[in-house]
Length: 326
Image (cartoon, rainbow, N blue to C red; front, side, top):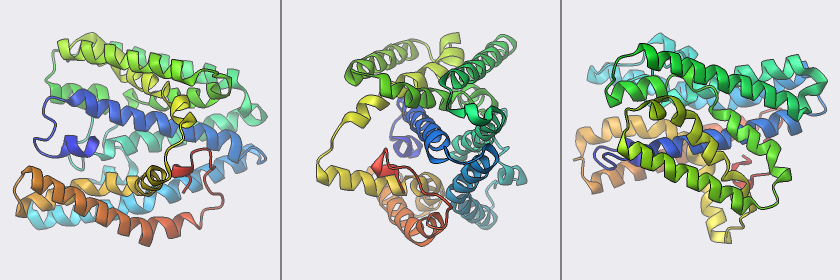
Protein backbone atom coordinates (compact mmCIF):
# COMPACT_ATOMS: atom_id res chain seq x y z
CA UNK A 1 0.00 0.00 0.00
CA UNK A 2 2.76 2.44 0.92
CA UNK A 3 4.71 1.53 -2.22
CA UNK A 4 1.66 2.14 -4.41
CA UNK A 5 1.01 5.47 -2.70
CA UNK A 6 4.48 6.71 -3.61
CA UNK A 7 4.16 5.42 -7.17
CA UNK A 8 3.02 8.36 -9.35
CA UNK A 9 -0.73 8.47 -9.85
CA UNK A 10 -1.50 5.02 -8.42
CA UNK A 11 -3.51 6.05 -5.36
CA UNK A 12 -4.59 9.63 -5.90
CA UNK A 13 -6.71 10.95 -3.06
CA UNK A 14 -6.24 7.85 -0.91
CA UNK A 15 -3.92 9.31 1.68
CA UNK A 16 -5.91 7.68 4.49
CA UNK A 17 -5.03 4.19 3.21
CA UNK A 18 -1.36 5.11 3.12
CA UNK A 19 -1.44 6.53 6.66
CA UNK A 20 -3.28 3.46 7.94
CA UNK A 21 -0.68 1.13 6.41
CA UNK A 22 2.15 3.14 7.99
CA UNK A 23 0.41 3.17 11.37
CA UNK A 24 -0.08 -0.61 11.19
CA UNK A 25 3.69 -0.90 10.70
CA UNK A 26 4.24 1.29 13.76
CA UNK A 27 1.86 -0.83 15.85
CA UNK A 28 3.57 -4.10 14.88
CA UNK A 29 6.96 -2.54 15.62
CA UNK A 30 5.73 -1.43 19.05
CA UNK A 31 4.54 -4.96 19.79
CA UNK A 32 7.93 -6.41 18.85
CA UNK A 33 9.83 -3.75 20.81
CA UNK A 34 7.88 -4.62 23.98
CA UNK A 35 8.47 -8.29 23.38
CA UNK A 36 12.20 -7.78 23.02
CA UNK A 37 12.51 -5.54 26.06
CA UNK A 38 10.49 -7.81 28.36
CA UNK A 39 11.18 -11.36 27.14
CA UNK A 40 14.52 -11.46 25.38
CA UNK A 41 16.50 -9.52 27.97
CA UNK A 42 14.63 -10.66 31.08
CA UNK A 43 17.64 -12.33 32.64
CA UNK A 44 20.04 -9.48 31.93
CA UNK A 45 20.86 -6.49 34.09
CA UNK A 46 19.31 -3.18 33.08
CA UNK A 47 22.59 -1.94 31.63
CA UNK A 48 23.21 -5.14 29.70
CA UNK A 49 19.60 -5.21 28.48
CA UNK A 50 20.00 -1.69 27.09
CA UNK A 51 23.26 -2.62 25.37
CA UNK A 52 21.80 -5.75 23.81
CA UNK A 53 18.67 -3.96 22.65
CA UNK A 54 20.56 -1.13 20.95
CA UNK A 55 23.17 -3.39 19.38
CA UNK A 56 20.49 -5.69 17.97
CA UNK A 57 18.35 -2.86 16.63
CA UNK A 58 21.23 -0.89 15.15
CA UNK A 59 22.73 -3.95 13.48
CA UNK A 60 19.28 -4.49 11.94
CA UNK A 61 18.63 -0.94 10.73
CA UNK A 62 21.93 0.90 10.23
CA UNK A 63 23.85 -1.03 7.53
CA UNK A 64 21.21 -0.96 4.81
CA UNK A 65 20.03 2.53 5.70
CA UNK A 66 23.47 4.08 5.32
CA UNK A 67 24.16 2.07 2.16
CA UNK A 68 20.89 3.32 0.64
CA UNK A 69 21.65 6.84 1.81
CA UNK A 70 25.05 6.71 0.09
CA UNK A 71 23.40 5.52 -3.13
CA UNK A 72 20.90 8.36 -2.89
CA UNK A 73 23.69 10.90 -2.41
CA UNK A 74 25.48 9.49 -5.46
CA UNK A 75 22.32 9.58 -7.60
CA UNK A 76 21.65 13.16 -6.53
CA UNK A 77 25.20 14.17 -7.47
CA UNK A 78 24.88 12.52 -10.90
CA UNK A 79 21.46 13.94 -11.75
CA UNK A 80 21.85 17.33 -10.07
CA UNK A 81 18.74 16.78 -7.97
CA UNK A 82 18.52 17.85 -4.33
CA UNK A 83 20.23 15.26 -2.15
CA UNK A 84 20.30 14.31 1.54
CA UNK A 85 22.08 16.67 3.95
CA UNK A 86 24.32 15.68 6.89
CA UNK A 87 21.34 15.61 9.29
CA UNK A 88 20.24 12.39 7.58
CA UNK A 89 23.22 10.65 9.16
CA UNK A 90 21.83 11.24 12.66
CA UNK A 91 18.11 10.88 11.85
CA UNK A 92 17.28 14.54 12.41
CA UNK A 93 15.77 15.22 8.98
CA UNK A 94 12.19 14.94 10.28
CA UNK A 95 12.51 16.23 13.82
CA UNK A 96 9.87 18.98 13.50
CA UNK A 97 8.74 18.49 9.91
CA UNK A 98 8.73 15.55 7.53
CA UNK A 99 11.64 15.50 5.12
CA UNK A 100 11.18 15.95 1.37
CA UNK A 101 14.37 14.24 0.15
CA UNK A 102 14.46 10.45 0.63
CA UNK A 103 10.91 10.89 1.90
CA UNK A 104 10.21 7.41 3.33
CA UNK A 105 13.03 7.80 5.88
CA UNK A 106 10.74 9.83 8.15
CA UNK A 107 9.31 6.63 9.64
CA UNK A 108 12.80 5.36 10.43
CA UNK A 109 13.58 8.64 12.22
CA UNK A 110 10.67 8.06 14.60
CA UNK A 111 11.73 4.46 15.11
CA UNK A 112 15.39 5.25 15.85
CA UNK A 113 14.55 7.97 18.37
CA UNK A 114 12.06 5.67 20.05
CA UNK A 115 14.82 3.06 20.25
CA UNK A 116 16.76 5.53 22.40
CA UNK A 117 13.76 6.40 24.55
CA UNK A 118 12.76 2.83 25.44
CA UNK A 119 16.17 1.68 26.75
CA UNK A 120 16.31 4.82 28.87
CA UNK A 121 13.05 3.75 30.50
CA UNK A 122 14.36 0.19 30.94
CA UNK A 123 17.54 1.48 32.58
CA UNK A 124 15.62 3.73 34.98
CA UNK A 125 13.03 1.04 35.78
CA UNK A 126 15.67 -1.56 36.64
CA UNK A 127 14.10 -4.75 37.97
CA UNK A 128 10.63 -3.28 37.58
CA UNK A 129 10.74 -3.28 33.78
CA UNK A 130 8.17 -6.10 33.68
CA UNK A 131 5.69 -3.94 35.57
CA UNK A 132 2.64 -3.32 33.40
CA UNK A 133 1.64 -0.40 35.61
CA UNK A 134 4.99 1.29 34.99
CA UNK A 135 4.66 0.99 31.21
CA UNK A 136 1.05 2.21 31.33
CA UNK A 137 2.10 5.34 33.25
CA UNK A 138 4.99 6.04 30.89
CA UNK A 139 2.89 5.34 27.79
CA UNK A 140 0.06 7.57 29.00
CA UNK A 141 2.52 10.37 29.77
CA UNK A 142 4.05 10.12 26.29
CA UNK A 143 0.62 10.13 24.61
CA UNK A 144 -0.44 13.16 26.70
CA UNK A 145 2.76 15.01 25.81
CA UNK A 146 2.29 14.43 22.08
CA UNK A 147 -1.41 15.38 22.16
CA UNK A 148 -0.68 18.60 24.04
CA UNK A 149 2.09 19.44 21.56
CA UNK A 150 -0.26 18.86 18.61
CA UNK A 151 -3.02 20.96 20.18
CA UNK A 152 -0.57 23.78 20.84
CA UNK A 153 0.71 23.59 17.27
CA UNK A 154 -2.82 23.47 15.86
CA UNK A 155 -3.81 26.62 17.75
CA UNK A 156 -0.70 28.51 16.63
CA UNK A 157 -0.59 27.54 12.96
CA UNK A 158 -2.73 29.01 10.23
CA UNK A 159 -4.56 26.83 7.74
CA UNK A 160 -2.14 24.44 6.03
CA UNK A 161 -2.11 22.73 2.67
CA UNK A 162 -2.30 18.92 2.71
CA UNK A 163 1.44 18.69 2.05
CA UNK A 164 2.28 20.98 4.99
CA UNK A 165 -0.25 19.29 7.26
CA UNK A 166 1.12 15.85 6.43
CA UNK A 167 4.71 17.00 6.94
CA UNK A 168 4.00 18.61 10.32
CA UNK A 169 1.28 16.55 12.01
CA UNK A 170 1.89 13.11 10.47
CA UNK A 171 5.64 12.93 9.82
CA UNK A 172 7.37 15.11 12.43
CA UNK A 173 9.36 12.89 14.80
CA UNK A 174 8.57 14.83 17.98
CA UNK A 175 4.82 14.70 17.26
CA UNK A 176 4.69 10.97 16.53
CA UNK A 177 6.69 9.41 19.35
CA UNK A 178 3.50 7.87 20.74
CA UNK A 179 2.87 5.63 17.73
CA UNK A 180 4.73 2.64 19.16
CA UNK A 181 3.00 2.87 22.53
CA UNK A 182 -0.20 1.35 21.16
CA UNK A 183 1.56 -1.73 19.80
CA UNK A 184 3.40 -2.12 23.10
CA UNK A 185 0.03 -1.96 24.82
CA UNK A 186 -1.22 -4.75 22.56
CA UNK A 187 1.68 -6.90 23.75
CA UNK A 188 0.82 -6.44 27.43
CA UNK A 189 -2.92 -6.86 26.88
CA UNK A 190 -2.78 -9.86 24.54
CA UNK A 191 -2.52 -12.58 27.26
CA UNK A 192 -5.74 -11.25 28.80
CA UNK A 193 -7.75 -11.05 25.56
CA UNK A 194 -10.22 -13.94 25.35
CA UNK A 195 -12.05 -12.78 22.24
CA UNK A 196 -9.46 -11.26 19.88
CA UNK A 197 -11.98 -11.16 17.01
CA UNK A 198 -14.25 -8.87 19.05
CA UNK A 199 -11.33 -6.53 19.80
CA UNK A 200 -10.43 -6.56 16.10
CA UNK A 201 -14.00 -5.57 15.17
CA UNK A 202 -13.73 -2.57 17.50
CA UNK A 203 -10.43 -1.59 15.85
CA UNK A 204 -11.94 -1.94 12.37
CA UNK A 205 -14.96 0.13 13.42
CA UNK A 206 -12.69 2.90 14.71
CA UNK A 207 -10.79 2.88 11.40
CA UNK A 208 -14.08 3.13 9.50
CA UNK A 209 -15.17 6.14 11.57
CA UNK A 210 -11.73 7.70 11.07
CA UNK A 211 -12.07 7.21 7.32
CA UNK A 212 -15.55 8.76 7.18
CA UNK A 213 -14.40 11.82 9.13
CA UNK A 214 -11.26 12.11 7.02
CA UNK A 215 -13.29 12.00 3.80
CA UNK A 216 -15.50 14.84 5.01
CA UNK A 217 -12.61 17.07 6.06
CA UNK A 218 -8.90 16.30 5.86
CA UNK A 219 -8.03 19.68 7.33
CA UNK A 220 -9.94 19.74 10.63
CA UNK A 221 -8.67 19.58 14.20
CA UNK A 222 -9.64 15.89 14.47
CA UNK A 223 -7.44 14.90 11.53
CA UNK A 224 -4.50 16.98 12.73
CA UNK A 225 -4.63 16.36 16.48
CA UNK A 226 -6.50 13.11 17.19
CA UNK A 227 -6.14 10.95 14.08
CA UNK A 228 -2.32 10.55 14.28
CA UNK A 229 -2.82 8.80 17.65
CA UNK A 230 -6.21 7.16 17.14
CA UNK A 231 -5.28 5.33 13.93
CA UNK A 232 -2.27 3.46 15.39
CA UNK A 233 -4.43 2.68 18.45
CA UNK A 234 -7.07 1.14 16.17
CA UNK A 235 -4.52 -0.88 14.18
CA UNK A 236 -3.01 -2.16 17.45
CA UNK A 237 -6.40 -3.68 18.30
CA UNK A 238 -6.03 -5.90 15.22
CA UNK A 239 -2.79 -7.51 16.41
CA UNK A 240 -4.16 -10.09 18.93
CA UNK A 241 -6.63 -11.31 16.30
CA UNK A 242 -3.97 -11.43 13.57
CA UNK A 243 -1.71 -13.53 15.79
CA UNK A 244 -4.55 -16.00 16.37
CA UNK A 245 -4.86 -16.75 12.64
CA UNK A 246 -3.31 -19.80 11.03
CA UNK A 247 -2.38 -19.15 7.43
CA UNK A 248 -2.15 -21.93 4.81
CA UNK A 249 1.42 -23.18 4.26
CA UNK A 250 1.85 -21.42 0.90
CA UNK A 251 0.64 -18.12 2.37
CA UNK A 252 2.95 -18.53 5.35
CA UNK A 253 5.88 -19.05 2.97
CA UNK A 254 5.00 -15.93 0.96
CA UNK A 255 4.53 -13.89 4.13
CA UNK A 256 7.85 -15.11 5.54
CA UNK A 257 9.66 -14.19 2.31
CA UNK A 258 8.16 -10.71 2.05
CA UNK A 259 8.43 -9.90 5.75
CA UNK A 260 12.16 -10.57 5.83
CA UNK A 261 12.63 -8.34 2.78
CA UNK A 262 10.21 -5.60 3.85
CA UNK A 263 12.87 -3.33 5.33
CA UNK A 264 14.95 -3.48 2.15
CA UNK A 265 11.85 -2.85 0.02
CA UNK A 266 10.97 0.12 2.20
CA UNK A 267 14.42 1.67 1.74
CA UNK A 268 15.02 0.80 -1.90
CA UNK A 269 11.74 1.51 -3.67
CA UNK A 270 12.17 5.28 -3.54
CA UNK A 271 15.64 5.43 -5.18
CA UNK A 272 14.59 2.68 -7.64
CA UNK A 273 11.62 4.76 -8.76
CA UNK A 274 13.87 7.83 -8.78
CA UNK A 275 15.93 6.16 -11.51
CA UNK A 276 13.29 3.96 -13.12
CA UNK A 277 11.00 6.75 -14.30
CA UNK A 278 13.86 8.54 -15.99
CA UNK A 279 13.92 5.66 -18.46
CA UNK A 280 10.38 4.23 -18.39
CA UNK A 281 6.92 5.89 -18.56
CA UNK A 282 4.77 6.36 -15.46
CA UNK A 283 2.17 3.82 -16.55
CA UNK A 284 0.73 0.82 -14.73
CA UNK A 285 3.26 -1.44 -16.46
CA UNK A 286 6.08 0.96 -15.71
CA UNK A 287 5.15 1.00 -12.03
CA UNK A 288 4.84 -2.80 -12.03
CA UNK A 289 8.35 -3.02 -13.46
CA UNK A 290 9.68 -0.66 -10.79
CA UNK A 291 7.99 -2.74 -8.08
CA UNK A 292 9.46 -5.97 -9.48
CA UNK A 293 12.93 -4.42 -9.64
CA UNK A 294 12.55 -3.19 -6.05
CA UNK A 295 11.65 -6.69 -4.80
CA UNK A 296 14.54 -8.21 -6.80
CA UNK A 297 17.09 -5.77 -5.37
CA UNK A 298 15.58 -6.09 -1.88
CA UNK A 299 16.04 -9.86 -2.02
CA UNK A 300 19.69 -9.41 -3.03
CA UNK A 301 20.20 -6.87 -0.24
CA UNK A 302 18.67 -9.21 2.32
CA UNK A 303 20.73 -12.23 1.27
CA UNK A 304 24.03 -10.39 0.80
CA UNK A 305 23.87 -7.76 3.55
CA UNK A 306 21.05 -8.03 6.05
CA UNK A 307 21.01 -11.74 6.82
CA UNK A 308 24.78 -12.14 7.30
CA UNK A 309 24.88 -9.12 9.61
CA UNK A 310 21.82 -10.19 11.60
CA UNK A 311 23.41 -13.57 12.23
CA UNK A 312 26.20 -11.75 14.05
CA UNK A 313 23.84 -10.11 16.51
CA UNK A 314 24.29 -11.19 20.16
CA UNK A 315 20.68 -12.38 20.41
CA UNK A 316 18.15 -13.19 17.72
CA UNK A 317 14.54 -12.07 17.52
CA UNK A 318 11.89 -13.97 19.51
CA UNK A 319 9.65 -16.26 17.52
CA UNK A 320 6.17 -15.16 18.66
CA UNK A 321 5.67 -13.86 15.12
CA UNK A 322 7.49 -16.47 13.01
CA UNK A 323 7.44 -14.47 9.80
CA UNK A 324 9.26 -11.61 11.50
CA UNK A 325 11.67 -13.72 13.53
CA UNK A 326 14.67 -13.06 11.28
